[in-house]
Each structure stands twice: as C-alpha cells, then as structure tokens.
Length: 328
Ligand code: AMP
Image 1: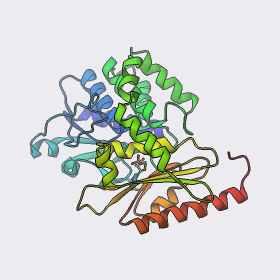
Image 2 (image 1 turned 90 degrees about the vertical axis):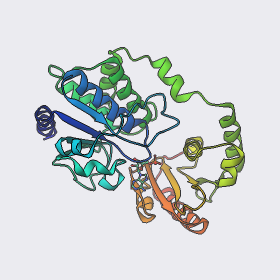
Image 3 (image 1 turned 60 degrees about the vertical axis):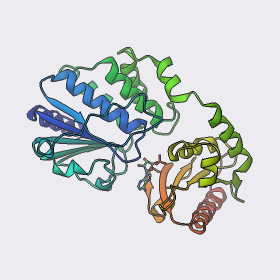
Image 4 (image 1 turned 45 degrees about the vertical axis):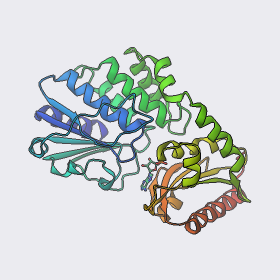
C-alpha cells in the first residue's frame, strides 16, 4: 500500500516542472529537514525542474540550516505540484498559498486527521517525516540523486524528532535509514554543535527553571514562563519554549508541561505537553490542540485555564499509576 503511494508520488513529481514544498507553522528540525532535504534531492535529480520551499517564517535555533527560497509570483503556484511535509492538518501549513497549487501531496507521520492531498502518504509509526524522506530516497535510489547537504538536512530531522534516536518509534529501519544518510558524508560533529551547544544565558535560565518548576501530587511537572521571565533572561518566544526539554528526565514525573506566554496583546498561551509511557494527547485535544501520544501541544487563554490543564494531567497520572506497574 505505502509502496504504491510512494510510486504514485514519484510519478507525480516526474510529471511536474514546478514543485513547491511546504511545511508547518512553528517550524522544527523535522519539518525544516524534510522540506529542505526533499527539495535538494529533487533539485539534484532533475536540475531542470524548479523546486522551491517558500516560507516566510524564520527560526533562530534553526537559522544555520534553513535556506528557504524567496517568494514566487502567484502564477507559479497555479502550475505547481505542492508537497506538504510533516503537517497533519491543512490549517497548520505555514504558507497559506499552498491552496493555489494545482495538486497537493501530503507526506506525514502524524495521526491522519485530514487527508488534504490528492495523494496522501501517512505513516504514523515513523519516528520523523525525515525518516520517510530517507525511505523515499532508499526506495528509488536508482532514480533519485542525493547530496551531502540533502542528507544532512534529513539526518538533522531524524535526530531532532526522535530525541537523538531515543523516543518510542525508533526502529531498526530508522537506524538503517539514518546510516544511509551518514554514508553521504554528514558531518555530525558540526551538526551537533549547531543543534546542542548552549549559551551561557540559556544555562542561567535553565538553573532558574529547576528552582521554580512545580510538581503536582501525582507527578506532573510544569512551569509557567511569563513575559517578565522572558524579558529577564532575554528569551525569544522560541527559546523560552525550549524549556520543555529541561523537565523531561525527572523520576516519578511521567508528564511535563511548559506554558509560554506570547507577546503582549496575543491571548494564546502556548502549551507544550510531553509524557513518558502514558498518552497525553487526549488532554491537548481538550485544550484546542493535538499531536502525538507522548508529544503534543495545546493552547490556553488564561492562567486559570492553564491550571485546569495541569489538573487534567494530574488526574490522568493518578489513574495511570493506580492501574499500571513498572513506571519509574
Ligand atoms: P510542539 O510542542 O509544538 O513541539 O508540538 C508537539 C507536537 O504536537 C507536534 O508534532 C505538533 O504537530 C503537535 N501540536 C502542537 N500544537 C498543536 C496544536 N495547537 N494543534 C494540533 N497539534 C499540535
């Protein structure tokens, strides 16, 4: 089934001269890696085709990797095949002009909530969209060409979305495909330096996080990062959001949450929801969000609503701990 869809996607790509690649809002390593990696594979394979990633959003953290292309006239979209990577529903696509494309292909590893493509290739068991792009290359390596840069993009997404190959969902196939990317000459030391070195100020913020994090009775750890805290540590919204990862390795605490206040005047407080062993995306869905079982996101509009979400997570952990053994 997946082999058929992949073959149909390859045929569709062959039949278009213009291909535009799209990804999701609030970009992350996986959607940047998958979009840039796919773009560069297609460019290397068919230099005569026009292949672009058009996205006006920029990420401070991924600035070293992201080289999205300048905007093109609307007429180009009408002639193009659009390929959307790593995006479960169409309203999360970062460039709204995707809708102008003649046809759309969806390539994604999230729960399939909306099949917005003419062709939809969705494998929710894959650890990243980049793993799927690597798999696409592997399936058609007699036709497709890859470059070191494309492989680096793809490897970056595989590494970041799988928590350095640590999360559930990483399989033997993940590592074989990662190996295939490494074989193209990815410079891992440089890549990891870009991804993981930390600024002095961020480490000061981290120390603050550990002093101020809260814990509920049943082991939900959470932190509310208000504007004052962001100002004090010179954080961008994005760097403040990265605090979620500081809370992930605490014994007994199976769920951790970060609430990030947006700029003045924006009422939507971002919630990053993570858990170990127990699925928490049902909670995100109840609070204007969604995502994967163990990594999802939500939006709340006040501190009171934030506490309702904390209470819901606490109740879930209480029930989980009463009915399961073996968690730590
Ligand atoms: P994040 O915490 O933003 O990295 O999100 C984790 C996962 O949850 C990602 O795979 C997102 O696709 C998904 N997600 C985050 N926010 C939302 C939302 N508001 N609606 C639906 N899915 C979301």
